[in-house]
Length: 69
Image 1 (cartoon, helix red, strand yellow):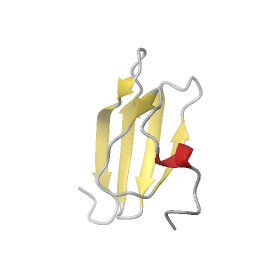
Image 2 (tube, one colour):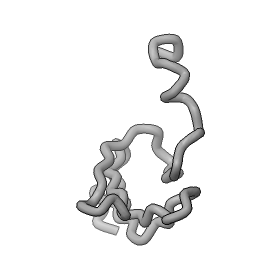
Image 3 (tube, helix red, strand yellow):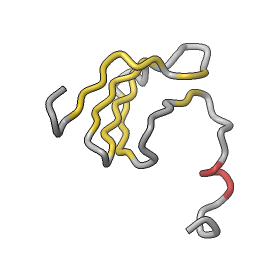
Image 4 (cartoon, one colour):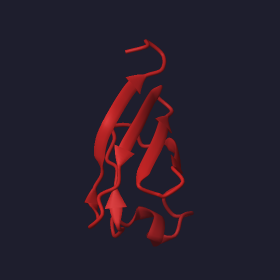
């Protein structure tokens, strides 16, 4: 699958990043785009703050949806 996606999707050049252990996630933003919500295929739910100046997002909440932790 490596050759099917444009280089853009493999790039780390972006305004902000949320670095999580699983490579696949469904993501959404809140109304003012200051918070990122991600649900991963390994059963985790993340709420992260997007920094105003860009960079790494700060994880505010992490839950395991499978084990309830």
